[in-house]
Amino acid sequence: MTGVDRRRFLKLYLGAAAGVGAVSLAGCSGSSPAETTATTSPSGAAGVTTTNAPGVTSSPNATAPLGDTGTFRSPDVISSVDGVLEATLTAVAAMVPFGDGERWAYTYGGSTPGPTLRARPGDLLRIRVVNQIDNPTNLHTHGLHVSPEGNSDNVFVSIDPGSEFLYEIQLPDDHRGGTYWYHPHRHGFVAGQVSGGMAGMIIVEDESDNDPVLAAATERVMVLSDPRIGSDSSVISVSRMDRMGGRQGDVVTVNGIAQPMIEATTGTLERWRLVNASPSRYYSLVMDGAPLVLIGTDGGLMGSPVAIDSLLMAPGERAELLVPVTSAGLVTLRSRHYDRGGPGMGAGSSGDIDIVSLNASGPDSEAVVPPTLAGAAIPPVPRTNGTRALELSMGGGGMGGGGMSFKIDGRTFDPDRIDNRLTLGDTEEWTVTNVSEMDHPFHIHIWQFHVVDASDKSLISPGLKDTVNVPAGGWVKFVLDIVNYPGKAVYHCHILDHEDQGMMGVFETTA
Image 1: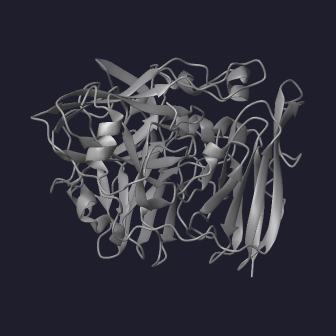
Image 2: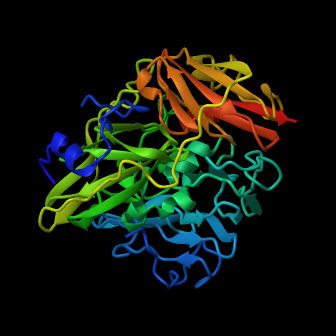
């Protein structure tokens, strides 16, 4: 597909989608067979319920161990059976394959990333987390619309070393299909554990996934991370300056593999599910030799595909892309330089990085992208009955007075304080303003929202979001429909070092 002309692409592959061109979208810039699983379980795999357990399957691309360079490989999969997903995630430090050797990592059951969890609306996720690392941990199911209380998606749970905890997370019957993810959320330890490798994807499949084009596409799970490479736990020990700017690793990996290669045949369509599981790194993605088609954001599929030239993914964000394979040759998904700012620290200042390549073989052949996706739609923006404003700031005096503090509304995180009180049934317009000198991705638990305005108009997304970048000196407005779930939960910066240092608030929702 190298050298495919963009205008020709839009004409040939978007067909009747007249007017669907490159647009600005949460950093997307106009300026510049579904995954099947093997029938056998991974022998002796730690971190799954049982060997050969129902719903536990190996990746279809299992040609190389996770962490090896070379061939693309997806994580193993645990699927729900008869409405229940059963999984055990064992947090354990391990040496994992990398290149011609090994590297130290935090893992789930010896693998990083952890298994992909596949469920459907109405399912019960029964996940046992066993803590075999030296620090307390817990689990957050990022993006899921579920209860934040009890043994559901409760980030106030703390699992001590040598202990375990059983999560029972009930998906509502009308939960949106989409790409979500899981990771630790134990305050003070999040950045180290996620940067060390503790993360995995959650896929909720609904009727929109039965669209015939999507059903025929080759699905790829892509967990983007940037670990530091070393032989012991010193890789998660970072300097005060790294914590202030937000740590970045030595190499970018996809499912633990550096610069993997996908082999594909012309005339096929690729569906890529991406999550930015890095603790701080932003990915400004472009595809050399071919455009991309955005079909979904944090909150699932959109009704109509959108052709884009680039995609900015802040930490925590997800995206679903269609990649038509039309001509033989090599194309590469690359992350371009993105400067996320910082008080003289140059945070995020890095050159272009190759993420993943696709090598296509066969004669030129069309791969048609439809103008709409059957069953996929974004609900309209609801009318609001209230407003709320938050301010993200950085200042001196943090970390014992020798560094920088990270605050929301002038306060650092206190789990025993309620910062905002919400009422079930209300619909509010929130304005989040960033008065600091670097970008902060803002994430709220429980709900998705509509971004309706921003200082940078490219942040206005056609899809639902739960994480949005708030640029340095800028602001974002979104509409939040406060429904279904009372209880305490949090909102925070998703640069995880900033979250750990206090840029997080607590809200409580009551009837």
